[in-house]
Amino acid sequence: MSIPAATRPRSVAIDLVRVIAVVAVVTRHTWYDPDGVVAQVICPWAIAVFFVLTGYLWSSRKTLQQEVDSRATALLLPYAVWMVLISIPYFIWAFTSPGLAETAQELDLSQSAWATRLLLAVVYGSQLLVQPYSACWFFTVMFIAVVLLRYLGRFPRRYTWIILALTVVITVVVPKILWYPPLGAGLALVCMLFIVLGQEFRKVRDRITRPLVTGAALFAIGALAVYLGAAHNTDGVLIEVKLSTYGYPVLGLLTGVVMSVGVVLMAEAFESRIPDKAAPFITEAASTATFSMFLHPVLLWMLKNPQEGHVPVQNYFIALLVPYVIAVVCLRRGWLTWLTGAPRPPLPVADTIGRLPVVGRPWRSLVGSS
Image 1 (spheres, helix red, strand yellow):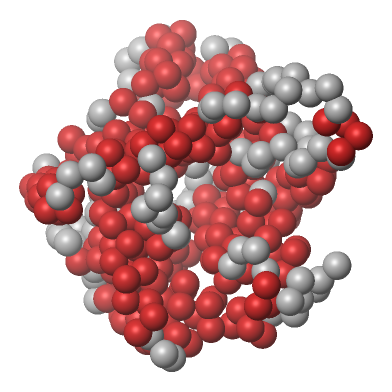
Image 2: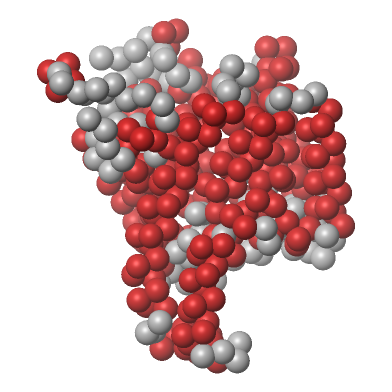
């Protein structure tokens, strides 16, 4: 059944933003050239928008324990399972591939020593890794950022702003030290800024009466700032949160937020024009985001996607569509919830007879209860 726009249980506009962001990330990882047009168009906002949305949708009613439980289900459980599944074939290749031996020789290491370092990096933090772990860092960073912000909610708001101010200073003076803490904890401090600014955006959203015009204007301002150099730091390095590079001091981070807010406003302006029949498909596509973020770099790696230069267009569509199709099947069947980060679909009434209700931490329902 189609659901009227006025009574839809969730915002299709927000789901549309998530879909756009995932497509942008896949596009970025396919055409990886840091100096290319794709990177400069996408890098300033494609990751920031996920954190801005988290702040925009922030609920003040959640407790710290509820936050930890729900984020463990949606973020940490898929992260742990995917890291194992990706690492098994990757390290079989890493310890045996002649191609990696050449890389090890360039670093004056044996192949086994270099592969062992990579293995330690998997445990320490995936922000240190490249393909096929390209997007894995996002999940631990999001978890840490959200839980830390929820904890800081116990204190006056000024403490949060003080921590963010100090973090911004670090991004200007010694940004690389934020790259080294385990599981991307340093990057989480930066991404917490995106979440907080998303919260501030929520406070003023009702005053914006022309979201399409305002959103387009904000995105255009952000694009102009990128054109003028906001996305590059003073050494000319492109903004890349994963690599702890943040563009031009302060302006690089703010540009990502401005463009993210612009995307959200434009999507909300078009929400009433989205056909009711299309809305469930957009929501379903948004629900595949976790699966797609983990799987598409693996597919690009298997296809031996070059890091620079010409990329076969079919590689892009394989990386974009194959994870979507597999995830949709899993979601509709209720399979592999630990890979999708989505809760198990409700059981039919007949199947619930004799089952005990799940009490306590939601992630327990994903590892079995009866």
